[in-house]
Amino acid sequence: MDKYLVGAVVIMHDNHNNYGTSLQGFATVKLLESLGYDYEIIKYNKVHRLKEFFTTIPLALISGGWTNLKRSKRRKEEAKKNPSYKMNIAIRTQKVNQFKDKYFESVAHYYTGYPDLQKGSGNYNVIFVGSDQVWGPVSLYSKFYNLLFVKKGIPKFSYASSFGVSKILPWQVKGTKKYLDELDMVGVREIRGKEIVDSISSNKAKVVLDPTFLIDRKDWLEYINSSDIKIEEPYIFCYILGKREDIKNNILELKEKTGLKIVFMRHVDDFIEIFDDFGDYAPYDVDALDFVKLINEAEYVCTDSFHGTALSIILQKKFLTFYRVDPSNPKSTHSRIDSVLSMFGLSERLGTGDIFHKMITNIDYGKVGSILEERRKDSLDFLKKGLELGRKNFEHKI
Image (cartoon, rainbow, N blue to C red; front, side):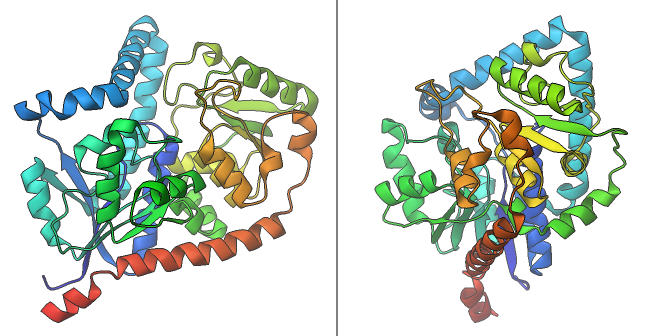
């Protein structure tokens, strides 16, 4: 091995149209480039074995797999019933896939089957798993996002990883503890994630910023220069992934009181009937940088998304963030939203109460910027330390 090589595991599902997923991967790539590292994105083509059918697959199903399967089935059924929905999602999917091909394929290394993945881990001096909900309940059994495939002796760490849930399922505590204990450094994205790690692992976690926050506003503005998307009149940009009727009514109230048009991103994760004809503009031919530009040029932003919130803060927009599920629902978990808003002293930007007054109230982005600068430095220091974990072994070998 004649060069120090970093292996990056980022969540990047095929034909997945969630813009936050693409943007955190994009930000990770840009960070590695700016820091001067040689790197590869590790891609895993899973080969199912019969043994798994009787062991891990049943566990995956009771840990959320059934829900995912039913969700996939609903999407297919809606596509059959709604030809226009099917056509528009195909347009978005093609646009998002083109973005991924442009920024990720040239730096990706594919491994097929678990033995190949394990062997391939020896190609790297250090391996890390990145941001977003990489540690969701179903992912435990793939042994990929938790880095259990990495050979002993190769340093490994997490950066801004998220469990996506507020607590670990009882039958997953032992397995979760195992992979957390094996990491050399644990960086999580949310306060609740740190609490989970600290309670079950011998490691202690550090809360660090999502990679999108590590890219400066001026750099984001430079990146979106390549986008030619344009809305010709002032608008409220809406990135809503949930199904709450009251949020729809809130947006209509804002439209009435501001006189602005609504740009609405329809059906990003699922078909949502109440939003099927909602919005004055509903663009589908939109990639991740187009998405950032739409946020940047909006008068106001309404979202129930972590990355919709993050980009609104980075781009210094007036915004409101709604809970995706009604907070009165006992199954609702909003630790991601609560964590990012409280981190920047912006808890008042929750979409509750007097929506219009909250939205038009100025945000002290001087104060927010100071917090961001401090946390960005702290997070970058953590990332740099992790990326250097394999340096001594590398220099010893050469």
